[in-house]
Image 1 (cartoon, rainbow, N blue to C red):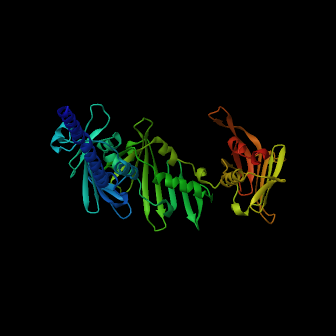
Image 2 (image 1 turned 30 degrees about the vertical axis):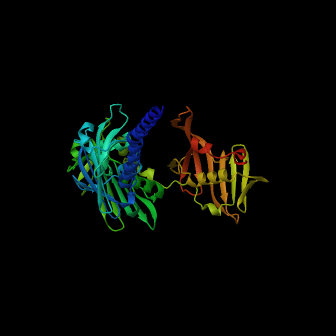
Image 3 (image 1 turned 90 degrees about the horizontal axis):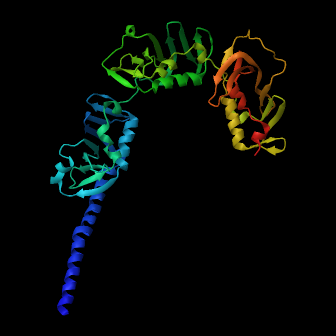
Length: 447
């Protein structure tokens, strides 16, 4: 019995030892390895990273951080794409290690790490670390990887393995154009049928040709930023397009307050999925293909730039709003910080949204003074009044314009234009059915 008891204790000790050797010890090693990996690679501070190198089937690419932005330095020198860099840093900072497979680096070939699918190197604080991506697991649940300097082969998820698909197009800035929209003071848009000339005088934009009049600052800045921020679908390095090879061309001449000039040619290629427009800014090392929508964006009429704000006021100056909506009328009155309709309190958020709608409301179109319609009794009228009872502007909306349908909404409702007159505009103007619907009913504003 004594021998039997000793035998049982021996077996128990062996089982305990085996459990420690084959389970507890590897788990402890895995924990330590994970901590080291997270410290060395996957939790590095993005702001400390100064250098990136990616090697994958698409080539070898290097990027460096400058004072203001990242630059692609190899295989060519180009501004880097901020969205792709954000994606890479998400990989670096938020990468997950699924499991440590082995500490035996001599087995690297088993996991296709001797001929890796991708290598990502990051430089920070004088250190360069490399993440090597190998083959996919048989179950397709992740990719084998290792970090140089750490004796471990581990498993990472699909997100980290995305570095194997990143190429030159992904890494380079997608912008074809290089200018500061805020510095532009003069614009010429040269088209076959007309030339549009716009200029800024004392912070006010004006149309100088083909007619004279005030221009919309918002629309012009949207135009300039829309050009500057347009992302190319494809690049043609070292090429300058020849206008003779395209159906039509629009030339943009932009001048800045520093007397810098920027010349951009936009050529209409076609309507195919891989056509659209081709554009080139003089002095750049590449041209590019842009969506057809970009051609429509720059192919504007001079009237598209006209000033069309129906009201001009500062929100803090508004103390009363008189509204007539067909057969109904009501007054919004401010008392201190609160608004009322009669003795009933108005919902503060709805009132604020309504005031902002009025402030941003633009005429759909400006008409000539010869437009004929009855002004006897407007169907809608909105008057804005200040603290002293002085008018800040009035808008009167009249009859529907015959034959001026704007088409149908997604809900199948037909949209029309209506004649309107605004104190803030010299011309007769128009508003749409959709605009009119945003004029609040009395009941809409009361909680």
